[in-house]
Image (cartoon, rainbow, N blue to C red; front, side, top):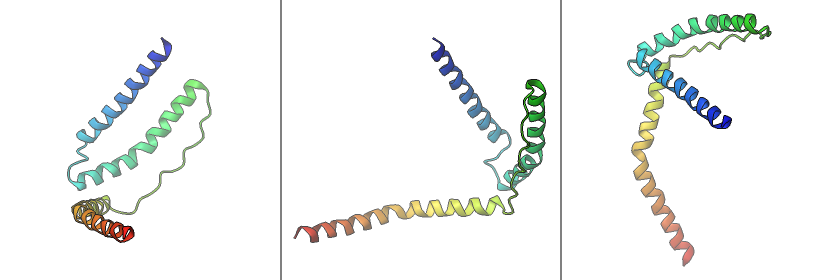
Length: 118
């Protein structure tokens, strides 16, 4: 009985985290214009480290555990907009060429098999 309850609790926790992530993405309009996404990322860079520090201090006070200081988050000096757009362009160009490349490679393979069977 206990493993089933534990399994159910894990499922509910994972579902809650996933649902919260989807809600956050929708609420902050992260899938909208890249300018808004850039602003939200910068806001997160400013807000998350102090929140993590406060949470770790709270856990230390409540449990008596000593949690080591977290390292500083890395600084990114590039625009997500440029990287995102180039990544999407590369993926879409690869997908658009895929049928002709598959036909070309299958033709080459067929010719190779013909030559090997002679």
